[in-house]
Length: 366
Image 1 (cartoon, rainbow, N blue to C red):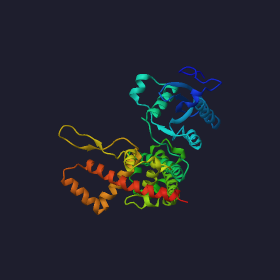
Image 2: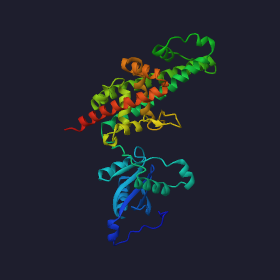
Image 3: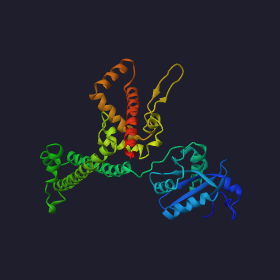
Image 4: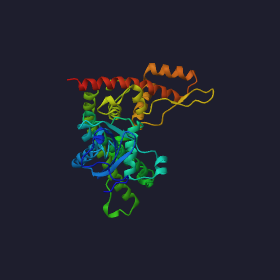
């Protein structure tokens, strides 16, 4: 495939200058192919090329980059999706990796979009230090927990949708049928699963509603069984992997699983509790002007992790005497509920960071 930025500067002799050159790579990842670009230490483009997203393609991509000189680091987009295989291969070869976020939309509109341009932007972001995140290794027990949680989360969403459909059908059902549908929770689902419709009269709204409710109720029961099985698998896995995190006040299996997934298998990527706070969207953002000195909630970061912190804060605000006393004190000082919640999340992150480090230290200690 011809390069957008011109032919590479490599020659058959591989000059001494090339041997001394420091090379930074950038990769725009896709399902079938990966597009790579290379720049030198001054940001000058050395070339770009497309490779298949296969084990052989990964080898070819790294060999191609090394042909320009000494590879210092490689910025890869989508290390958790399409780029996961490439990231694992490069890490196994001792290559320094940088996780590249999606390009800024305003900058993309200004310069246009293509795979070579995105690869070049990734390389320059890695070179400049604008992107400096360490990708997750995705090769330990946390990755196993993430996979189990994917299945559970999908079942929970599907069950919620089915429950909403059931309630909608009952709300609009004919009066004769709606009056017979009473109860709540599992009893209600069992009642509707036991409905029998006359297959010869499905043009009758009553019989059609019975048939639909029975199908949806059976789906809910099946999804509930999936969720129960997922919980049975996750509970011991999370307890073995993160006993210290699991013991933090307000942290249950689901919350611990989410925080572990956010942190990844390599805690060294969390350089400090402040880094974890930014990752979870719990770092205070300055919102001061003139004589007003205040901070606001951070709406960035991993929103699922922020939701987990929110759950911990709500549990503590309801049941923990120390937290309730803190909320009362800060309320008297004039802080709003959002500001108090922001402060609580930041304190909680401090505990979570300590617990995560203790758990990962125990996991990696022979």
